Structures are given as C-alpha cells and as structure tokens.
Length: 248
Image (tube, rainbow, N blue to C red):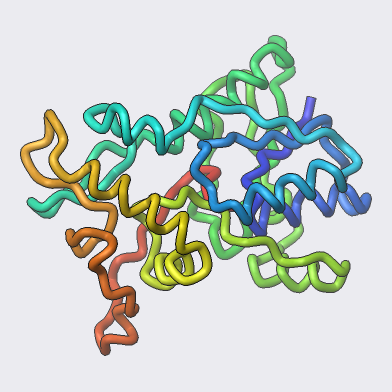
C-alpha cells in the first residue's frame, strides 16, 4: 500500500495534486493527522482536497492538542520556551502527527511489504528527510526526486490553476517566526486570542521550575511585538523549526 502523508501545506498539497493529475503514481490514501489546532483556513483547504482528489483522504487523530494543554499542561508534549533559557519536552510531532499515521498504516503492512509513505519535503528542506522509525513503513520523498523546491511547488500550483494553500502548522507552535505570528494575529484574530489563552495557561505548570512561554522572547504572547529580528536591525540566528510532518 502507498499513502501520502498529507499535512495540507504547500508541499504535501502539491504532492497530492501531482498524483491527482497523473504526474506521479497515485496513492491508495492521503492521510492527514489532525491535532485539532490548525487554523480554520487549513481545515477549509482540507475540506476542498477531500472533495477534489481522485483518491480518499483519511483523517486520523490522537486527540485535540489545545485541549490537552488547557486541561493537562503538566503533560504538555510541546517544546515551549522556559524562563531559564531552555525549552520543554519535544514530543508533539511524534504523538500527534507521526504515531497516528503509523497506527493507521500498520494493519496494511506485512513482512517484507512495508507501507510506502510519501512525504512532501522539498529540496530546500532536505535536512528534514528521515527514515521511518518503524519497519512496517518506508518513507519516500517524491518532491526531492522531482527536484522541486517550495517555490517550484507554488509555481506548479499556480500553473495548474490552484490556489496556494495557507501555512499548515499548529496555532501555538513555538517554532513560529515573528512573521507567522503576526500573520496569525492579523488574519485570524479570534484564533490568536484563543492561542493567547493557552499561552497564559502554560505559564506556571506543575513539574516545571521555570515559567513557560510560546514565544522565544519569554513574554506573554499578547504582549509581544512581532517585528522580525531583521526588521529590528538584528541578525536572526534562530533557524530551528518543527520537524517531521508538520507544516508540509
């Protein structure tokens, strides 16, 4: 069996539409791991993909990440910034993205016949390419094989008459840069306010010696000035990002 790991961002959308248009072999399923905490625009785009694609889109989930943070912040799997200069546990991608897809795929695999997982990582993100953690799945990267960058994906989408999809990432991901935070605040004000409430909730958490923050400035999210470091005349040395299947 073959699946597309569908994050509903630019690259995985391009991958799915390449298959739909017959430019690559179509999968049996496109599988979207739903954290329950994407922008509404992403879910709207996913709804469109479900109706448009010539193969089935399956949504899998390990629960609602935002609800987990609100009700059990002490078990937060998200690497929030801490006031002592560190970051918390980084487990959200595995728990809420990778593991649900693994659980879906496992019954379809057999000895010597792993499920082929196509992941939408482009040439400018080659460092994110990683082998499967389980033997019953094999990761592949068709956009790498096609030598397509993220910009190439956007050009291809426009050439085919498709709209470039919104950024796919959890609203409260600490790896957002200031540009994306500003976009969320201005374009999705209600969702930004809900995210601020989660940020307030994680501040003092049982089991953590230091206060936690979503933003790397270690300030309450609603109080942050979202000018980029470059806009403030500084070099930006923070280049880390959410790994795995988030945002593609």
